Length: 93
Image (cartoon, rainbow, N blue to C red; front, side, top):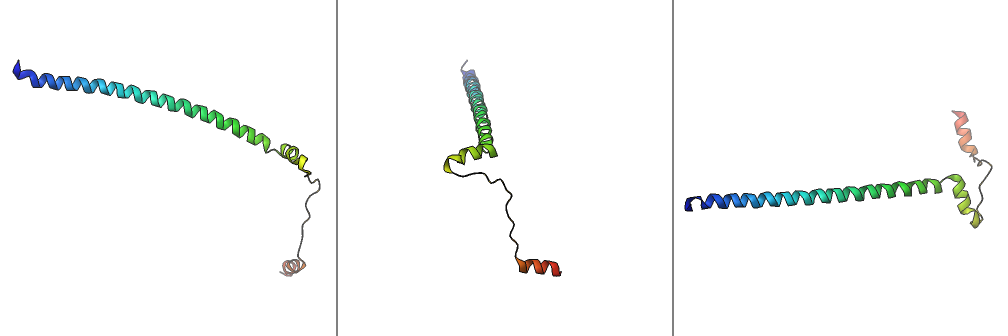
């Protein structure tokens, strides 16, 4: 009986390690599930904000947003300015 004390202590230590490992694994799984849920929530929030931003940056929405400031949309195409010296250089080549 006395000879087997070390063996029984070894078995008790293994049992304690086994129980600790089980608790540690369960905690890790709970943390992973919690983080996964948070990530899904953040992805949903990101998609909603991106959808709103895409809507707000449409040309028609920008025109509506700046209308109270007196800024109006230009209906005619922009003028191009040409330098006569550069034009002469291009035609001489």
